[in-house]
Amino acid sequence: MARPKIALIGGGQIGGVLAQLCALRELGDVVLFDIVEGMPQGKTLDIAEAAPVDGFDVSVTGTNDYKDIAGANVVIVTAGLPRKPGMSRDDLIGVNSKIMTSVAEGIRDNAPDAFVIIISNPLDAMVTLCQKVTGFPSERVMGQAGVLDSARFQAFIAWELGVSVKDVNAMTLGGHGDTMVPLVRYASVNGIPVLELLEQKYGSAEKASEVMTAMVERTKAAGGEVVKLLGNGSAFYSPASSAVAMAESILRDQKRVLPTCALLNGEFGIDGFYVGVPCVLGSAGIEKIIEFKLDATEQALMDNSVAAVKELVGSMNL
Ligand code: APR
Image (cartoon, rainbow, N blue to C red; front, side):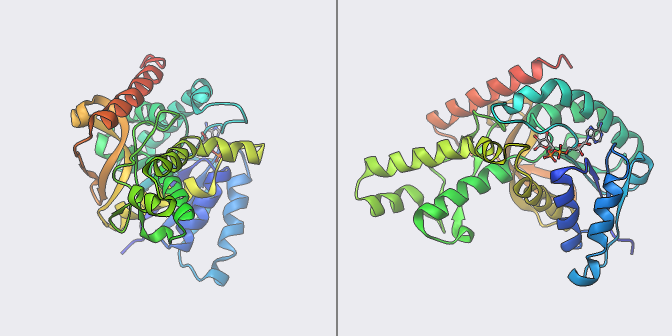
């Protein structure tokens, strides 16, 4: 049986890490596409020459020709500019929507059966644009943001409580921007509410809430924190890991419940917009959007986040 094929559009910082992770996990044969000549070929040759050391039996090749993505089962898109210090993700919309249009045409014409995972920012707008241009059904076009935003939230909780990241459950909803919604009420360590554990640690509910608020704010600003420290470019290891988790769930039909930027059809009171919500990802792509009750505060934060997404998407005049 033929191995699955994964096409990566954009061979920059995230694209390179994606190629290596897909190879190390033997998710399938990897094709790395970029418009820069030589670079994707060079990066993939470098990764492929590590195969005897790491022991992976998949091929990893680079290309400047969209024809080489033919037959891809999953396409992950990182083409586009990253932000510079002081920029918001939304500042990238002009330049990245031009790039996304050409990328979506390339995918539509050469890999018409693929599942597409977008990482390029501003995420919610880029996923919307990609789905419009490809015309693919919405269960096959999704965005990676929530897995990473949630991972950041989980990491901060684990560090604060001195427990393993493996035992922390926490999730963010909404758009991938300053208005994202880290869900405090559902954050737990193996089911034990984080707020309760913070109260035990600090001896007061007020202090627990203060510490939680600081973690929520750090989560919302976490991408910018990395951008500022790097000085040139944005996060690339963690976005790559997050998208690979989504691709793996689809390719191996794991049916993981992952926060995914998905087209909503009335769920959470939102209709016709791409927003981050928990989804079951399996061999049919987004197999289910999991809806659950938000309290009044959470719903207000979600509505605020959706309003920001609507404004940004509206500015593209699709
Ligand atoms: N088609 C394909 N690739 C393109 C195109 C295009 N039309 N235009 C630019 N690229 C490529 C660039 O040549 C570059 O190699 O996209 C790559 C982007 O890589 P980086 O600049 O290193 O950016 P990266 O850190 O990987 O982030 C990519 O993901 O998280 C988001 O905000 C981030 O939008 C940015 C994207």
